[in-house]
Image (cartoon, rainbow, N blue to C red; front, side, top):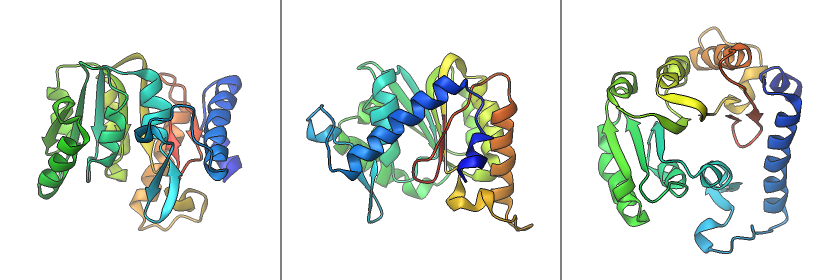
Length: 219
């Protein structure tokens, strides 16, 4: 898996090494039970994924460092990742989050309001590929975590809404290790992720680092 991951990265080696060292340090601190120097309880590095503790890399390591004005999230689900990302927003910042499942809207809104970031988060319900072109803004940070077979389409769509220096995060790119296992002809999600990872490695418009965190996060 490690060797395969190296084939999916296009950033200069020094940058790859720096990002991986930061991710490794966060993971090591978590394993040792060490808390980041920012002692605000809301900023503790550790959170839960099912019954497993994992680092809150999305908001703590990236959104907080960037302090973006505009964030786009594709795939809201319960709203947890949107709240994490919103913690890094500047005061006047906005996060646009898109989900195709209307049934989750009330749950998302309830947690957004409880988080204190409800006024910063704009919810959209529907097809992201149709909604994104209608958004009249340029995003500093994009988080893709939706239908895996559409990752390439989402990427191309958001590239038109970013600027040089923007960061695009793609979640679940290791897909439980399936990306290095023999491909099942019926497994369209894995096939799409394999093509997507290869594309990011070869695309001259971006520099790519794949973080071995949780189920794989491409930056």
